[in-house]
Amino acid sequence: MRRLLRWCSALLLLAAAGLVHAHKPSDSYLMIRTEPSGISGQWDIALRDLDFAIGLDGNGDGRITWGETRARHPEIAAYALARLKLQADGQACQLEVPDQLVDTHTDGAYSVLQLAIRCPVATPTTLTIDYRLFADLDPQHRGLLNLHTAAGARSAVFGPEAPQQSFELAKITRWSQFVDYAREGVWHIWIGFDHILFLVSLLLPAVLLWRKPRWEPAKSFRSAFWDVAKIVTAFTVAHSITLSLATLGWISLPSRWVESAIAASVVLAALNNLRPVVEGRRWLVAFCFGLIHGFGFASVLQDLGLPADALLLALVGFNLGVEAGQLAIVALFLPVAFALRRHWVYRRLIFQGGSVLIALLAGVWLVERVGNLKLLPF
Image 1 (cartoon, helix red, strand yellow):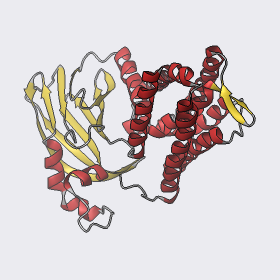
Image 2 (spheres, helix red, strand yellow):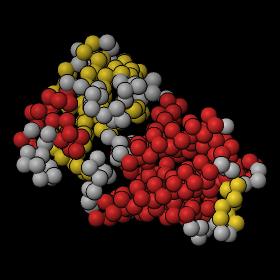
Image 3 (spheres, one colour):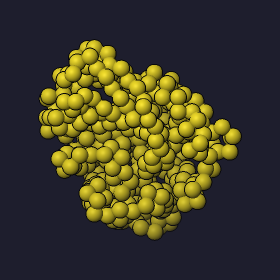
Image 4 (cartoon, one colour):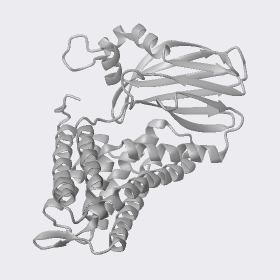
């Protein structure tokens, strides 16, 4: 038991340090289209990431203007192309950037690099992509690929664990598309710090019972398990509804409102642990706020630019991926929390201390998102 307590205390400290320095994980969006006439592409890279790598803010005022970006177009192209390589049937392709634009994604402004791709093979059967952007600066950075071929569309995620991947262009099956989007769902619940903290805020009291004026240990694992099952199910059903509505274009809300509401939901869920207002129906809280979180998940699929014929498949796969990611968190959390529920380490440090930490961090996010400010220097 003591060894378990030491491990849990260490993990809590590491998690706190990581969350304090947490920010929206860095992503870029790479679209490649193969046609009988050749291969073309587009690469959207966040200006904030490029500024960190090569410095775009010339006057240091904290704002990146179009003039500052345009003046650095050659450096942007050179930096990006040095970290992306394509091979068609094993032979290297030449990449150029004939034009650059600026576009806005859900999390800010992006430099849009139009890619001219010339390969020795006119109609390749296999395309190999080697992606190393920001590999030396940010281990959390991921490249999100949207590959369009005559056989259909598929997606993939590039990162330090998978910097090089090969794709058979004539064998893109519905199953491979489904697996791709399910993997996206798992990944985006794991890197969505605000979504994870909301879920954790609801899970923390699952192994306790509110008996005024204090929390007491739950009597059985079965009751804690069913409490968690109702919470996760309600959250999944709710975000699936709004994710589908938003991705299909039936409902559209401003990203700033959605992100602010998500931060507010984390604050309220954490504060409810410290002074319970909603006691026995946390699943209802999970459902109501899960509707808001669904709009946040939708931004991921919208940024990928999904083709119409893959939309339903993407929705199902992504939702199941998110659910699998949530269940993995629950599977790690619940047995440990139940084993420690009677000890002061859980009740004081993890439950109360963790709830305070979550509320404070989410409160900063809320102020930043409502006021369009940057209070944290990371």
